[in-house]
Image 1 (tube, rainbow, N blue to C red):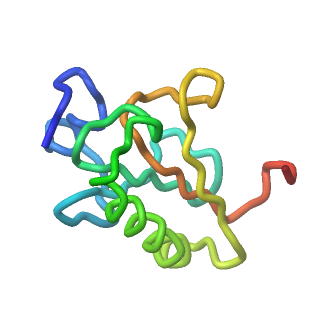
Image 2: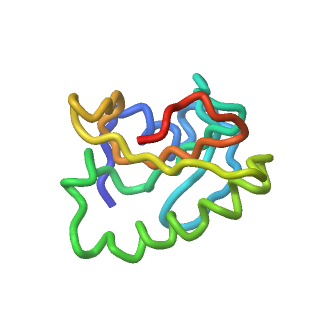
Amino acid sequence: MTHDPNCIFCRIVKGELPAKRIHEDDEFIVFPDIHPAAPVHLLMVPKEHFATLADAQAKHEELLGRMLLLAPRLAREQGATNGYRVVINNGPDGGQEVYHLHVHVLGGARPWKRL
């Protein structure tokens, strides 16, 4: 599994930086965003470092599927009982700030407009 020693999410995965782990298994962790954009704002982060969704490979198919299938349960458990969003920002024009693929799960309010 690849890691980037300068990546904040790799450092959280390795336990070098603190995070309240909502879920963890062999392939990914889930923790609250430290700058939440909604009452429920979780980050789902693969333990393997790859920068963007465009960098995902066929070997990541199962991992990404498991992450997306877990999102509804975690959203509900954390209080997003009336719906939620699942967002993956990609690249500078996609609003990505940390270049380690991660999935945002946001719920508990509607601060956004319909797309």
